[in-house]
Image (cartoon, rainbow, N blue to C red):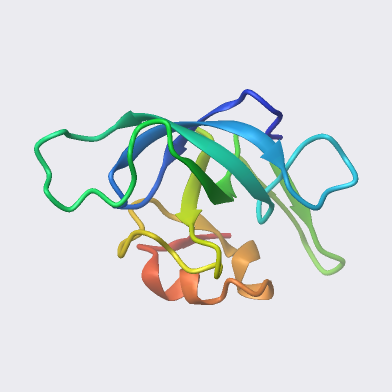
Length: 128
């Protein structure tokens, strides 16, 4: 569960390394889970020597949560429980397209059933 003020890792090659959650969009609850959109502030960059940085430090960007430390996904046929080691997100623009061109970490099979089906093709793998 991602609350306001939570520190998050970036799982794409947009140039940012760490961000902090400012607000969770379109949720009745105060926290975000996998598949939720959040507003982030960039806190740390990967390397200052890169010429193709797509974000700057302190910039406010939208992000999609792809993995949380605590996540449970249950179906009627079989129940799956998935947990990751860190909270990670993907940075997206206003048109809900990825800022980066690659996804570095695997994520849950949950994204096959959402409108972000394109992520499953770009990622290195899916976890059941």
